[in-house]
Image (cartoon, rainbow, N blue to C red):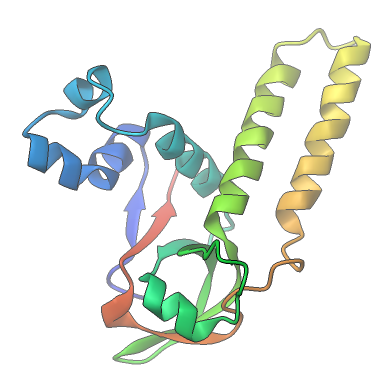
Length: 171
């Protein structure tokens, strides 16, 4: 589909590309940027975790604020510029972006899912704690799947020239 979609199979290559501007501007490697706290590793990890939960056709996109303002009637003042959804059609100049949700919200849920999965994995099989963690984990999966409560950019044509980033994760 869209030529601009970038796919990543490992975290370091993703982090290197995601922070390429910082790495280039500072003339440092990813390792040096981590050591000197030049990048937000927590946000990068959360985005990577989100990408790992997406369906095969879903993409993470970043748009300029002016385009989001034009395409939504969000008046809350905390305008989302990243979204998760899928591209259902495309023309030479635009893509039809469907069933989207704000990326930041889904990143937070994905991080919680990741943390709960680690907790379940590191807890004894027959413990009450594991059952509670499993119940919370299932609740977070339901929250992740339920994206009806914030219908951003549903069925919107977006100009390809304005898509800052389009990302998928391939394992």
